[in-house]
Length: 260
Image (cartoon, rainbow, N blue to C red; front, side, top):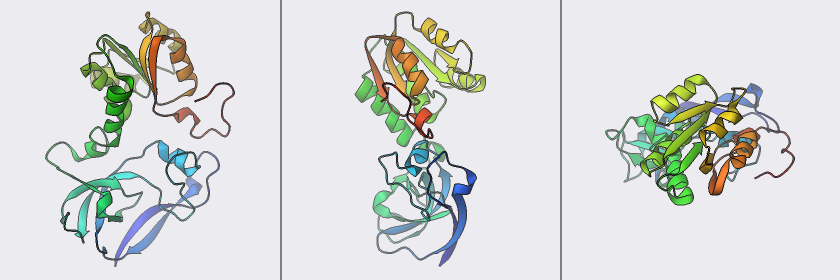
């Protein structure tokens, strides 16, 4: 048997999570059974949906007290009982918040460590990047000349959305982020035309000024006041991709009025 540590749910969550909702627990892992792998977690993706899942507000299964907190991860195989994977292979998939994970080989995806930095496999080359691609290519269907606004632009989904929109011919790509430092990342590293700090007192006016002819595509990760402001500046036949509602994940009550 191999000993490992994991972060588990200590009690049911019915409000914004706090430290007392979690605890570290040591456990023993048996050797992998037929078609299983033991994987050492290297990188863990702390995705916003987990907070929603803990309260039963997500399409994924709601964790129960005693369960390992869910999470996508990048890891390396340390024991294999599958002909598809060998010790030393790098894989991604659902592993949870733990040092070692016993997983089904069929739920893992092998990755080539030589293609890009390993961390990108749970970022731009993983689920966030696929989400961004589906949003811009399949849903928004960005066209040449489009005016595009992206919330949470400093994150892995938002940052990739803006870059894909630019590749697809968007004329103006503007991000929204929560600090001047994040906005610098959005413009200097991700190549957005501009970025608006939503903590500035005049951020709504800045959005209106950035889109004098209206917004053709708004990619929303937040909901709430940011979504309302984008809708108020939407061009005729504008498209909105509702990717996330981070402003509501930990709210005790849903806001009044029309709400996605």
